[in-house]
Image (cartoon, rainbow, N blue to C red; front, side, top):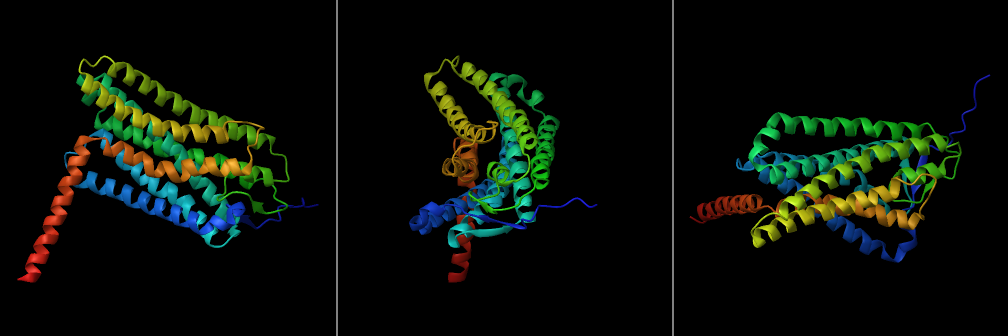
Length: 321
């Protein structure tokens, strides 16, 4: 006798911000603007770094990868959010939902490892400046980047595979603006204990370990900064690292509050607000904070702008004559 398949749900309905119907247009405009700035800002960072030969240090290599990742990370979520705001109750097929879930976990985990690697890079640059070029050699940088991306690829498989094996009998309404782990688990009509515990352990392994490693790097950095004799130099370095740590804390704090709490469910509205921070806000803030605080990067931007303006001026002058 063949086992009965009770997974009757073939598509899900993303409810999004259905309790804010009167604010749909304003939210659409805000999220569209943030998405546009995120894409353009990260593309600008990649362009500037690639065009200026002085920006070939490991720090800018990490920054380029982070900007590239943020473009795809936010593009996994925000277009669905915008579509949902334009047409309430946006439908997404089961396979598309699982695909979105996989890439969300993949990019999110990769970002955790990249941020930890960037924290380690800054630790070596500030605490061991004389040995920095040896300790953070091109081979070491490439290894850290490769491990970050490959580990992210592997991390995405377990949650998406386990969620896809659950039974969904209905209703098919996801009270969220994308296919996230907690609302999908709540919709399942099968036993979810093993799935919840597996995702909890994976979240501990990725989020908490990466956050602790990043935090340890910045503790050593702050300790080294406090020993700088110049008050102005100490303040400048501290402000730069402080802004980095603030953005990292926002990202890890919101992610940990969402996924490192077995058998405990936040309200759907709180989940959505928290999710906005790590899916919409940090992809814009992360590369901007890391780049605009750097003197070499700002000089490279001015150089690119002067070159572009010079080319445009020459074209206009040639057309005039």
